[in-house]
Amino acid sequence: MDMDRLITRINELSRKNKKEGLNESEMAERDSLRRQYIAIFKQNFRQELDRIEVVDDDSTIKH
Figure (cartoon, rainbow, N blue to C red):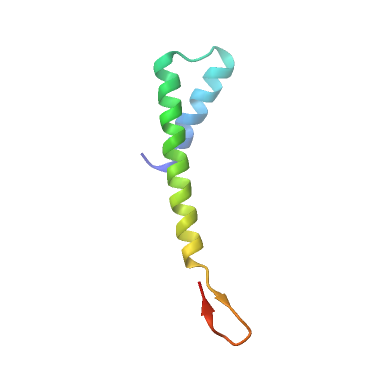
């Protein structure tokens, strides 16, 4: 599932939970989707961090 669809479904479940509550299977789905979201977020964040290069005054690149 791509990130946009994941967020859309999490938001749908959140709205439903606020209005009328969730049944057990919906709560399990919400928890699973949240774990997937966090895993994807961490992966994307790690990739961004890996692209960062720090250059000192002596122009040496450090990671």
